[in-house]
Image (cartoon, rainbow over all chains, first blue to last red):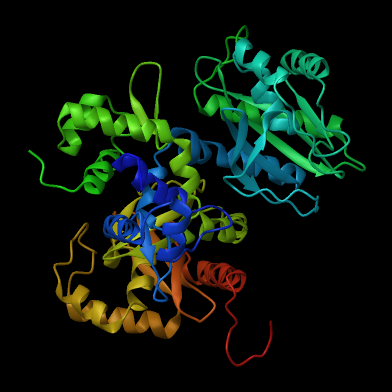
Length: 253
Length: 253
């Protein structure tokens, strides 16, 4: 029934879990992973014994604490977020708006931190959520600083539209990316929902390479981009410094 | 060479990574996981293809973003922490001290969140760190509310001593646990280092069961336990309410 390798089968059990499926029965897992019940039973048993899965008294399984402990070692996940958190908190204190940290994974932006503000915009993003690069402020920053060949491929590929404001024209997108590299700030205006605007800036690693992006999402109506921009920029530079980046030309620490 | 099952071998590759070993070469992994280089190569390849590991340009491997995304679904890891974070931030704002969230895993307490305060105590705990239950405030809270049979076994087992103040006498520990259940607060005084004190309170789930603990760690000298106690208690109750817990006997929401 199953031409996949042993590692692929085991990983397919983990991949059966997602945001809409955080608790699964053995039957759910077997169906979602495309495994026989016997194989699923054996693999779930091994994963539970190790701690990657946990079984609750009702017999359903969820992702276990041990997997979380290992994942906490991911440099781009919790490790980056741990360094960034004080600066994200400062940005939240200064704006009281939704604050995000995100990294690029292929053609997606993945949110690795999300502090919720008091103003409610129609964007409900959770930690671990993915969006296409061109539709979000953080994604535009990360795309603008990706390798030129990658940018070319991305810009010519199909660009999903979420609202009438989503940028789907390749040449407009290319001009915007050049502008983002020049100004150091990306503004995404109602690209995912009709009511939200985000302001994003790049986070740099020790060598100056862009490793992440930080942003604030606010209601589009009444958004004060000129006020948010310096705050986002300062937070992004603070995280970059904490990662070992030093700005060129000023000689300061 | 290897009597372990296929799932065990794959998981041993993940287990090769820990806080002191976040970046490993293929040779490191093969040695730490007890696998031949050929087997390690095959398993690391499968894990990298899937995204559980990532390879950097220098050829070393680290834990990948995809594992972090799956681990973010762990109810006791990121999911709990996401619900708790606003209350932990409030506690930090109110005290400007180190604030922690922790859960129990067997005989250990595992820290799932840690906000750093400005005061420096000699305790440097990272997210994902483990300590024995009896030596920390959060651990004492979690032990005090564990099943009675588990408490008995724990109290009679060897109790590791970290300082002259660490509680290692079974009957003193039992009395302290009863006291913690009665007052709803645990104070751990210089049990891990000579200069730190922590104040901890239980976090309850919808059914009233203790699912986590929240604490503040401060320098022992000058610690104002009476001032910290209500703040920690309010934060713990706030997280409990957010998890669906309702206090008995008052009828309020």
